[in-house]
Image (cartoon, rainbow, N blue to C red; front, top):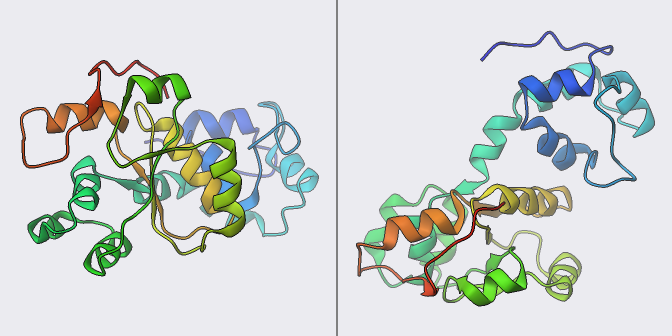
Length: 211
């Protein structure tokens, strides 16, 4: 990937064209870009964004956040096979494929991890993973206000993009062990169709394209 020489006069459009993951990275770190009140325009310069949103970090730290954002995105993702292991914690053989130490430790303690579906209620009715909860407005506020910040939570959507955004939102609010299921429910369906050893998807097997 070509490196962009980032400076105070670099526009957000230029930054996001080279580092698209920076949109979530800046939100996770600085609460910038998540809504209309904290948003920015493609023509806004990095200096303007830092000034308008009271980013106190030095420029070098902001640049590191931008350039490392893709790696952070990868670190927030968890494989569907690992999610399947959370639904079968008694299967110790699955622990060898866990890439998230916090998830593995929770499974070994016998904990049931929250598996949260961030799709629409209609999509939930059509197709969802057994054991998952739908992220309603009520559940979202309950989690943000009362759940321990170190609880491992796994989010999933259709393709994994929207769940990564939700995971980033929770990170921005202090949660330290959230994950997004890579590839979403589409990857889950594909990986588990030929295996009877894992939990199967319930409902009609027809995931719609989406976030």
